Length: 498
Length: 134
Image (tube, rainbow over all chains, first blue to last red; front, side, top):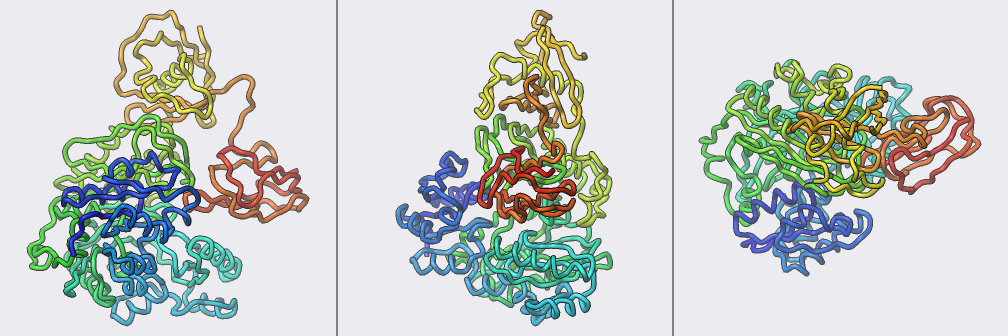
C-alpha cells in the first residue's frame, strides 16, 4: 500500500521531524492539534491541520476516536504516532488498522509483548537475553513483597510494569521503607499509566545506560543500527546522548547488538525500535526494556550512519525491505554525534517552567541540526512534555563534536521561559563527560553551582537598562520580542552601584 | 537619573541609569526580554533571569515563615492533609503535577496546618500560596 497523506498523531518537535521526511518523500502531511495548541509550530508545518477540540489530553492528543475522526476528515491514509502519547498503545494501533489506515509502527502484538515490563522481562529471559535481577511476577501483598525484597537485595527500585521514560520509578534503601514505597508506587503507577502493577528490580549503581537501535521489515529481517550512549540523565530521564558509546569495544558491541536483534526477533518486530540495556563496569549487560517506537534521540544514529530513520519507517510500513546497506554488512559509521535536549525546566531542581518564548534564535552552521517544536512567540504550558527542542551536532571525532556542541549552545538564544541550558553547558564542560568515562550518576556529581552560573556585570547592567526602558509591559502580557534587541543601542548611559 | 532594584536569586542590587549620559555603542552578544517584572538577559551564551524589585511589593519566592508557595506551575494532584491537622517537618502535604511530572510539597517545619488554600484539581502558578503552617 502506498501512502499519499499521512496524519501525525503528535505535536512538538517530533511532529515537525516526521513531516519533514514525509514532504521529501512526496507524502502530504496532516497535523492535529488541541485548541490551546492552535498556534503551535507543528500546525504551521503541515499541509493540512485538523483540530482535536479543547480540553485535557485524554480528549485531544490521547483520544483514539478523535484522531480517527481527524484522519477521516482530512482524507489521510496512514498514521505516524511519533513518540509518547499513543505511540506504544496497541489498542490505538489496532483501531488505526481497523479503520482501514496504514499504521506506521510495529505490529500491535509486538507492542503488547514489550509494553508490560514484567511480560517483556520474561520474554527476554526465554530468548536468552540477560535481564536486570528482579521480580518475575507482580508483587501483590506486603509479605510476598518483603520476601522478594530480601531475595533481590537493597537498594532496589520499584518500577511500574506499564511505565517507561523514567516515570513511576522509586528507589528504596531499606527493607522497612518498602511497604510505604510500594503504596506510593502503586498510586503513581495508577495515576500515570492506569495500571497499578509494580515490580522490584535490583538497583545497579555505577552503570551506563546504552541502547541499540533495531529495525525489522515485514519479510522477517531484523538488524541493529549500533548503539546510543544515554547515561547523562536527570530524574532517570535522558538529557544528553551520544553515538558511538565510549564504553563499547567491538566485542561488547557485537554481543549487545546480537542480544538486541534477538529481542526484536523474539516478538517478530517490524519497523523502528530501541532495546535499552544497563552496562556495568565489568562489561556485563542487562536488558531494561524495549521501546516500540521511534526514540527521541534517533537523530544521532541518523547523523553517524547517514540515514533517515523516519524514511525507513515509512518505507517499511509500505512493504519495502530494509535498505540493502543495513543487511549486507556494508554499513559504516562516520564520526561522532551528540544530542542535547532543551527542557523548559530550572537547571538545578529540574522543576517545570512555563511562559511565552519572547526571543528565540537557533544555532546553525556546519554539523549543527536543531529539531525544534517551538519558535519565537510559542506558549509553553503545563499540560505537555517540557521538551522544547533538540540540538544535534556531528563532528569527525568526539572532541570535535563536543567543541561544536559548545559553540552551537553559545549561539542559542531562548528568552522568556527558563530552560535547562546551563545544565547542558555544565555537562559539556565537565571533565568527567570529556573523559568519556561516566555513568548515570554524572549529573548528580557535577560541582555545586555548575548549572547556576552567576551573571556577569554586563548582564546586571543590561537588565537594569531593559527594566528602565519606556516599554516595560504589564505583568502577564507578552513583550514584543523586538522591543529591546540590544540594550546598548539607542539607550542612554548607565551607572552601576549604590 | 532613574534607579532600578534588581534581584538575581539571593542577591539584590540597585542600579542607577543616567538618561543624559552619552551612548556607548553596541554589544552584540547581549539580548534582553521583559515579561512583567522578570527581565531575561542572554549574555555571551548564558541566560540569566532577574526580578525587578518594586518598593511596594514584599519579597516572594520560597517560603515566607510558615507559608508554603508553589515551586512550579501545575495542577494539584493530591492533598494529603486538612486544615487543623498537626504536621511534622518533611511530611508530604500536597502533590503538584505538571508536564507529566509529580512534585511533593513537604511541611517545612513542625506545626499546625492553619490554612489550606488549594484543593485537588486546582491549577496554580509558580509562587502561589498553597498553605500556611503555624
